[in-house]
Length: 180
Image (tube, rainbow, N blue to C red; front, top):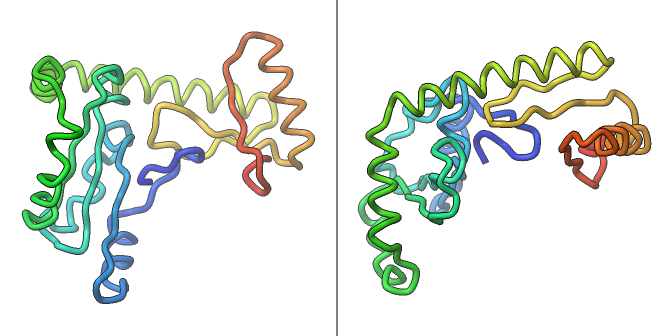
């Protein structure tokens, strides 16, 4: 994922370029860009050519555009890769209402700018709250902020329980070292 869930961090376009350069022949890189529009650099992967037959990008309207119920997404890739979707298109097609919603969302740049601004402000506020309470917020290109509790998973579970007790929605990965 780029940006990643659950950390919120992302790979630079230079790093992705290097990964693509070093991939073995015949390898396809699928990049999950569900949070793509929410980062501070929404064009982070622009340098990798959209028609590069070694890379396919998957995006969704469920995050920044807020239309998760429409269950709509899209892929960016070389024509030969995209045409492969024709094999399953009739089985997993989408309705006209979802198509209309997606097109309207793409056209409403002002709404997207507002959402991005609000999310950026929320990430900064959550980060400040974390720092004020001895936690370390990780840089985020998503609509959430991951906090490093700085100790082990047991301590993080106590922090999580206290947040949930106060009706603060929080989640925690269950495996080390992500469970800090």
